[in-house]
Image 1 (cartoon, one colour):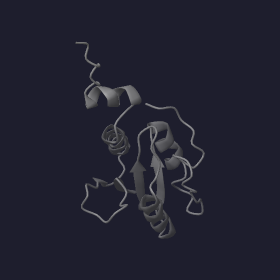
Image 2: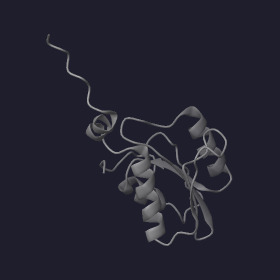
Image 3: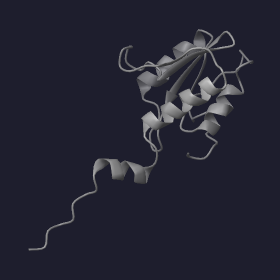
Image 4: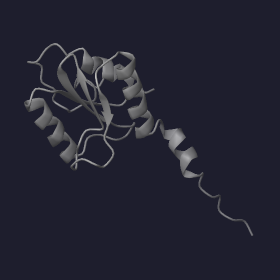
Length: 130
């Protein structure tokens, strides 16, 4: 009998679509630590729903970042949490790659800048995948 081909194991299917959210988060955290940016904390389900993945203190300013992989965007609760942090004075955003992280960090010294959270990085959605 001819059997239908089995789907590739989950790990191989994920690789075909791009990096995992964990790998995006790990690269973001590594880059922030490489830049010497304060305390970098990865949140793992200990916070409330929507709590950003990465939290850091950069030159006295709070930085909160939600990490996403290709094909995924913010959930409403995540967008709401980022807005709360931004309203409290934090630099807040979501990223899929290091180019978008650098775009977001370019606004660090501009407390008047506001992210729309419509696109990753600084809201324009630039940057290529890893």
